[in-house]
Length: 271
Image (cartoon, rainbow, N blue to C red; front, side):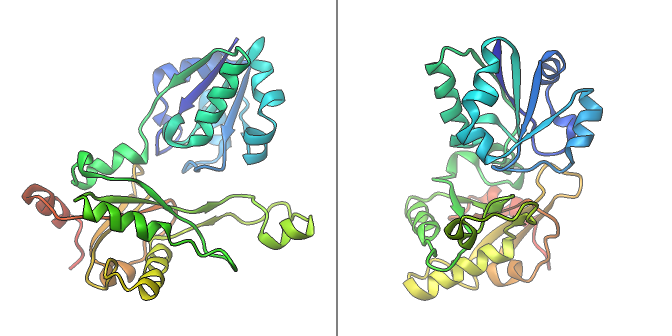
């Protein structure tokens, strides 16, 4: 009679912890949260490895129907919600935990690696990261400049900036929302490092703050934690020209570097 929030890590089905795997195997219901991030393997591979049926939980299920689909069952059964990375890498799951607490549903969290700590592999000191920001896809009438402000503020404080890039998984478009229609099976969209840099350059042209320039040092990251992970550091114009391949991508804007940090980034330069 517990809601388990279980981190899956960043790679594949084998990144789950032993404690998490034990909880999955004895649970009555197993859900896979599938909109704040995505795993590098499909749910069928998870099911074969776990020996359990895995139910995909989209945004509507977690945010609008959690009470009947997740919390009510957890009053009498063990229910697992599998989350890519760490369960509390997204505020969605904090909200879910609070709703469970209000209903008297016990919650047990089993943590795992997330992008927030795995970026330590790049070589920039984790304690020097400032506020994390997200770079969303721009749409007509929606061109937020918040990421630029966060990068500027972090730089003024001597902090690196981790930029999480937008994911659109089975979400309705603006037109579909206005028209009240929704096309099922829409192809997911994953922002690339290249698209994120172009967004920042567009904001720079508007703001002229000399925060994001062609020679600004940036680090592009793709599929961190996977065997084929890709990390490229260098001037923006160089990183912008690189093909990072399949998702998921992230972007880092370093501030001033310590000697060891500079040596670490040299490993990821493309000459």
